[in-house]
Amino acid sequence: MHRLKSTVFMLRLGYLNLMLLSTQIYIITFFFASVLSLFVLLNNPKSLINRFFSLLVSSLALWILSNIFVNLAYSYDYSLSFVRVAIIWVALLPIFFNQFVKYLYFPRDKNYEQKNKIFLYASYVVTAIIVLLSQTTFNVKSISLESWGVDYEPGILYLVLLCYLLIAFGFSFFHLFKISQKTKDETGQQARLILIGACITLILSLFTNIVFPFLGYGFFNTFGPTTVLIFLSFIAYSITKHHLFNIRVIAIELVTFGLWMTILVRTFLAETRQEMAIEIGLLAITVIFGIMLIQSTMHEIKQREHIEKLAKDLQKAYKSVDDTNKNLEHKVAEQTQEISRAYEVEKTARRELEKLNQTKDELITASQHNLRTPLTALRWQLEVIRKNAESTDIVEGADDPAKAGDKTGLQEALKESEESVNTLTKVLEDFLEITEIKVSGKNTRE
View 1 (spheres, helix red, strand yellow):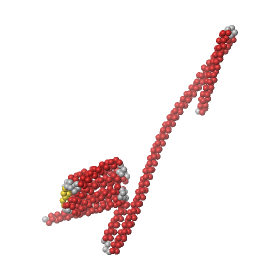
View 2 (view 1 turned 120 degrees about the vertical axis):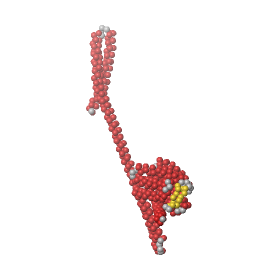
View 3 (view 1 turned 90 degrees about the vertical axis):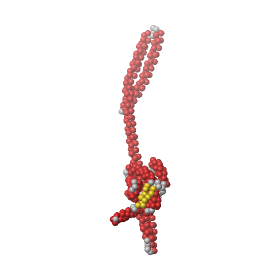
View 4 (view 1 turned 60 degrees about the horizontal axis):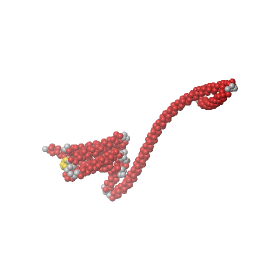
């Protein structure tokens, strides 16, 4: 009997220690998430990336804070209220995570923008339903105060939340996966780390806070908020390794804030007025120098970002010039080929023209003999006829005057024919002489 009581006492003590340990882990996680959210927002309040990341981590911090109040209250009414409130912060996570991914990787993607609008409208409707029904039995039917903490019986709203989280986060995870596969540079590595951390956290928290409680194993919900550390660890690694945010500013702000808090606590714990005055003066000096240090660091980072932007623009300009040179070389090569083809065509045409000219010259040379020979023969025959006619006129002219008149007309016709032949011969000779000069001149040039 004594052993049984001892065993029961040890079990209760173990559960109590586990509850205290889980509460301490909750507080550490809440503090880490709150500080990270605050300083990322203060780093660049105008940046939408920083704003939605801060809202995302703040929702996680508020979810953890609700679980802390559930364990610390350890009262049926208060614990039930805080358990039901916790679902609100979880329902906001997909919206903030989606907007964080959008402004980080798809700020000007019109195709993604259209899909994202549909996603946001659906998310707003589901989130509004969850918020309106959060304090009803559709959310959490009842709770039981156990030695290890608070167990709860989830309602139908948890199934809606489960489907909503799977679909909504699946939409963002799909586009993160595309970015991680598409780009192999620092951006792709950032997306890969965010995707892995968010996937692990989502899967573990869904099982510990939704699936296992439905199966009757509510004890596992104590591990749910601690899974946030996985996501925050991957984000912190992405910040330090792949420059997701300005780590130098965040680190300096964290150190400065911690130093201010330490001096402030020492001021309140001072035992004498002299020590308090010293601590207050030290706090004032630390605040002044801390602000100056943060401002100088931010100015240096802005200058570095400006230089990096100029370097990227210069690199783009070099790439554009290189592409222009390549296109110019390609166009020059094409023009050279076209000129070569045109030259070959012109060369072929010139050869054909030379052949035609040669044929023409041969025709002219052959025509010289063929045209002169008939005219020469015709002129010689006319001259013979005229001489024969004259000798006949001398013999027969005195005897027959009529015949003498006819022969006179014949003589005149023959004379006119001979003159025409001579004129034609002269024209032909001039023509042949001109063509012969052109042919001989061309042959001389060649």
